[in-house]
Amino acid sequence: MLLASFWGCASANTKSAQANTGPQVVQVAVATAERRDFPVYLSGLGNVQAWNTVSLKSRVDGQIVQIAFKEGEFVKQGELLLVIDPRPYQVALEQAEAALARDQAQLKNAQLDYDRYQGLFKEGVISQQQYNAQQALVGQLGGTIKADQAAIDNAKLQLVYTRVTSPVNGRIGLRLVDIGNMVHATDTNPLLVVTQLQPIAVVFTLPEDSLPTVAQHMRNTTLAVDAYSRDDSTKIASGKLLTIDNQIDQTTGTGKLKAIFENVDNALIPNQFVNARLLLETRKGATVVPAAALQRGPQGSTFTYVVKPDKTVEVRPVKVGLTQGDLSVITSGLAPGDQVVTDGQDKLQAGSHVEPHAAGTSPAGKNAQASGIVGQ
Image (cartoon, rainbow, N blue to C red; front, side, top):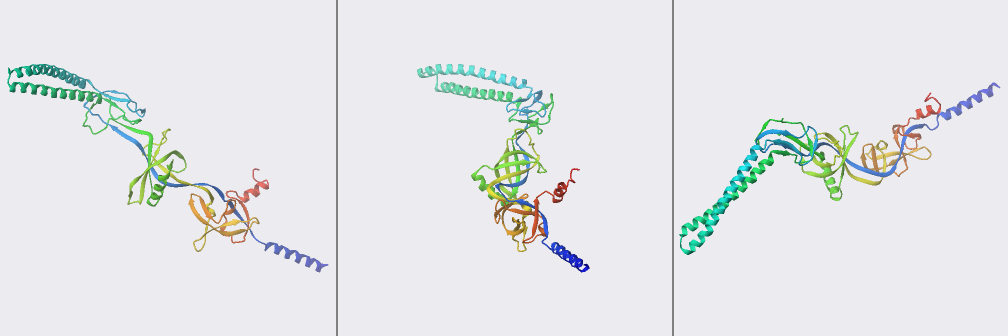
């Protein structure tokens, strides 16, 4: 009886040992290879620049008698901003007009005399010298009238300059002069600054090796550019690439590119730093997996662990076409729907048994929730 009990215990221990020496199951995170369109971006640090920045200065001398704007407001092209005392220039215009009237009267009288001199000269009453002198006087007075007309045009232009208007649609900065101040055409400081914000430009840099590819794509289509915040988390505006600079910065090995944005909501402000993302192309129907699924072999080859239907893994060599952010495009070695291991690869080898769970999901949390621990 005792002997039978001993053999029964021995048999049970043997079965337990065999169970413990069975295949070890490894908990791994997995993701599914997807077929989708994959946008290819080039990123660079950019600086926002006003489309036009105009420092308005006076073109005449005088006293400011009217300020027709408020600081920070948006103005339209041709809108009145400042008025410089126009009275001296109005007087100059009237003087020029008076001189023109006087000289026109003199020309009329000289022309009548010249017409009479023609008949007298034919009759031999006056000499050739007198006739030529009268002819010259008519020509001289004709030139004087042209000078008078030019003086009138200049006086009118000076009068126009007393009304300072906005040359562009834009936003006015802080006021730099006050009403009653004397201003001069030779002043170095501007009266005010107007910046055009719609549209607006972003100038950003890319490595010089990327510029030929960008230029090639520009010849075929218009390239889109997105502006993101400095922390690269918030999209601010969308625009399009306008041009590439004609030289490369030798100190940094980068080239400048300029993009234009409509900026309808004025979200972009001049001198603001942004991250620019240039959409170079979109690869249609690409096979995409998380970059964390890729492993490097001892010879530099790239492979990934693929979970088979029997929950074992195989080592699958792959070719990577592009890695951007946390995603990679696979050109060969994987098919859409394949499950690849994204975490736990250090415990795996070909043929290992695994218990897969979705990336970002903790198996311990799932077990605890199933047992009723979570949420109590």
